[in-house]
Image (tube, rainbow over all chains, first blue to last red; front, side):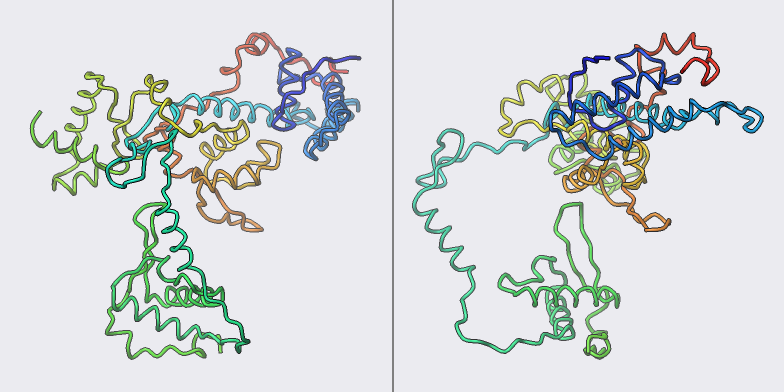
Length: 261
Length: 191
């Protein structure tokens, strides 16, 4: 039996099965298992011949098809099972195929909706033209702004400033205390009222410092002394005091109490 | 148009994202029932005017958007290539949208393929969000669609999703086959 099947990209075994059912003009609720199983296996074989990596899911479906086919070969004892619907071994597969077809169709109708930045646009979707007046050597070249020597040097200086000074000699490993950082955060928040999450970590903080700062923040949230909020999704996360600063002072938070001792 | 009406339009125009009715009520210190006819009036006005954009209701708020039929003009200005979903991503998105809250396992059963990678990408791109953990063994994460999903597809809420059709209605090729079928006894005609 030779079957001509173009190997376009099937999204999965259900996709492939639906394709086979359609090309054979078969009734989905009455799948001809012998035919479909043979064709399905042929496609898998073709995939293997082309050295395509056949995903496990495709093989699992092949096994399921063969299993259903073999169950259909067995004589049907109707007295045992009352309902004919339930005894059709194909029932679950048909249900899955119908369900899959529904979502596949829903996916297509989603794609037909006017999408942002494809059919529909908002204000500010593209950058305004570079304003020629602001900098001396900023002119537009082939759609992008050219960078002058000054900007280049300035950018390098900024990077240099951010880089950490390297220590040459060995230093004793610093033991950081969560309690200290708890107090540090409380101090900072007491002074400015609120602080963004990113500002909590200084740029030159070591990994260890960052981890301890984060732990300290979590402790404070657990003690309900600090509130974390965000205006909108993807916007900065803000920390603010959840208690008045007067209450904090007498509360002595030490390492033992936090369970890090 | 009176000043009140113009001010509402101006606020919606100047806002960064969709502006909800509640936010507008706060600004103007009035009730929702006062503002609703104003919004209606504006929507009608911009629709009739056809000035290249319209007042859309998006994710529970209002926002000016360009008319979809002008896409060819605007896409000329789009430096990045227009974003396209893969078939796998669209299927996954549809399943989550219609069945949320849904776990990864449930999506994978429906699609019949591993969907971890697709869901991670959709989560990273902000189309999906985690709704919580399902109270079953393993406590798998439950996913739903995000506000960004609504904004992207220009939907006012999840109820505005295209209705999920029944199978017989959606495949014209199979429809004639389905109708006369009188379900031959299972097993008899198959082998």
